Length: 475
Image (cartoon, rainbow, N blue to C red; front, side, top):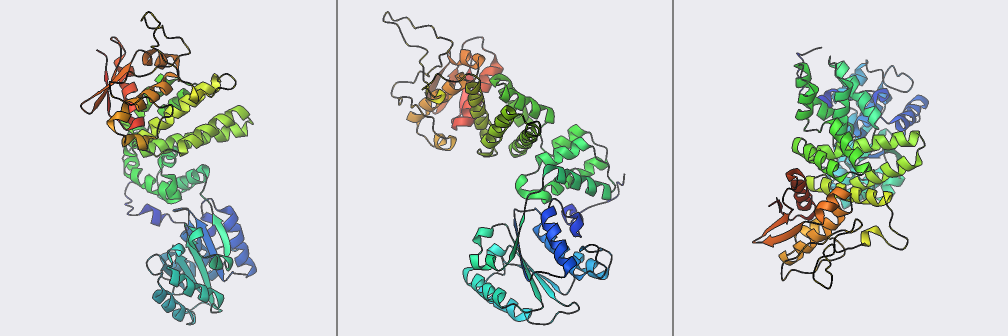
């Protein structure tokens, strides 16, 4: 293992230089190689896809293939001067333009004037217009005129993360290639190639942790940046636990335990492991890991043709994706998942919707004695005098954070009703709890002898879901 290499920008150093090394874009690569092999290079090309998926890298590799003096099956050889100059960004006939900062009408007119000049050393000039959606309205009109009557020796490659912002007339004049987000297997293979190229031997489990903890919106570049974070630790022989901590990532075992708890469902176990996860890992990273693991389970269930499992994991995935990647979002998603799984295993009677059921645990008999709570019952919170009556529908977490004092206790009551429906242990505790609100502080009062961990977990869930700071009391 080489421990003497200092990489200042791994994403730039590891950027693929040929079409064959592009990550996860087999369809686009096949089309572009065919264009080069047949000599039918399109004069206008549109590459549309998310951030970090390889649009500009693909455009540069295509330029190298077009100019290469020793092409290999429509791809660049990566050995000739033409390929080296394109990769280094010094080829005189490859011009990159940032439309986000140079998309005004004056800049586009200047670009059009210069485009008529003959190529310096090749038979054509290729313009890569990055962030093409950043063209101003007048700039887009001027650019459209350029595409309608382009100089014969020019090729225009537009790269954009927001294709819909481009005028339809511009889109209609381009060969459009959608650039998709590479899959997990492609990202893992790419990281393995990069690590090996730089002399590092990295455990497969660590590479999986890097991929699963990377922000999916940053594509391939995001995973490479995460890899760069841990290379100094790998070089010094750090353990996997130290590397996970450096990535602010959760232990994969905890992720699996959490998902198992949600699918059973077991609210107590889910909350306990979720507390462990959020105490160690950054919420966005842990959220990303959970979603990645969910998608892995979904793919496995689909491969096994397990319809029930596919339905379960698909529901979990889509539910998680609807919540913000924060601690509050994790607890909100967990509450909904546990609630839905509980009612999936115990469906409501015909004509009744589980979310619409409301019960009162302390309904009193005519004589004044409280009616003992039944197993099927949930509970209500004893509101203080003057508090608003509980509503039958809990507001969103964002709305709850801004509710007035008179609305807060009913929100907690409704949330506790949901938690009580999750499993018998939470329900048994919830039916004996009450919430008070004094001087801006909300407290959930649990019976004496209640497990402090369970009480704290209950208070934590209420705080994160509703936006109301809730403390636990077992006195």
